[in-house]
Amino acid sequence: APTRWAAELLAKKPYNVVAVALANKMARIVWALMTTGKRFADSPA
Image 1 (spheres, rainbow, N blue to C red):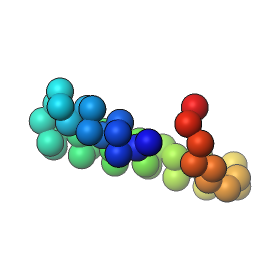
Image 2: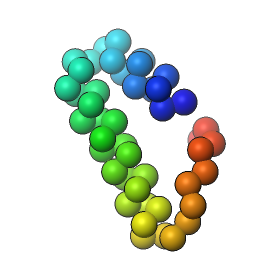
Image 3: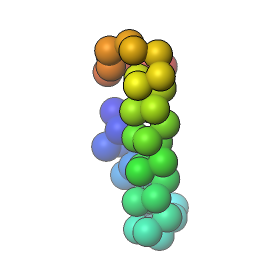
């Protein structure tokens, strides 16, 4: 889950670094959805 990913990263990195990493991850997901026209499926990779 994204919250677990962020929590694990937060245990190792400063808050601001995690915030930027999470924003980057979400932006890449949104960009991929917009360019492909696919719907978001929340399933683990």
